Image (cartoon, rainbow, N blue to C red; front, side, top):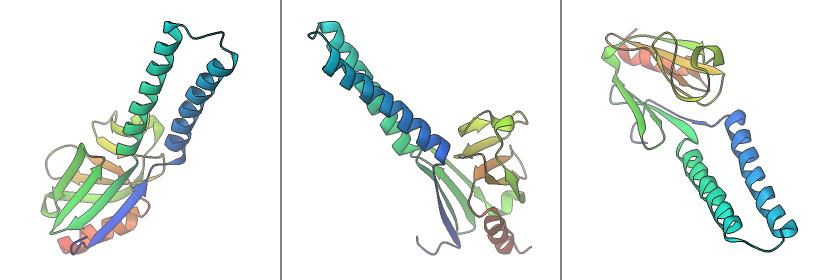
Length: 161
């Protein structure tokens, strides 16, 4: 992490991990049940098993991609990466305010990349502590963090507040 003022990895929460594990377990149990209790293999059975394992593979790739959030503050820029495709960055001079908040289900109706009822964008992995960044122009951005106070302290320190 080349000269990062602040760096944090926030792994996926128990709800996301548990949901993925439950779906995976169901697919595995159904497949094993077909092998054990099935009466011969018809083409439909083979296609169904292949289809469910394809879905499981896609879910595994999605889970791997969204397994956590990387937060970095370096070179007077805040970087928040949620997987390979969802990346957000702000120059610290463009941030009007930073505060600790909660990423609630009622505000975002789930975890992941979400838009809140207030128009904000969020990258959340749990319904716990989060950082709310209000840019001088644009939408409020909320992201999960294990140390939201440290993130805001680091932003404010670099901004000179």
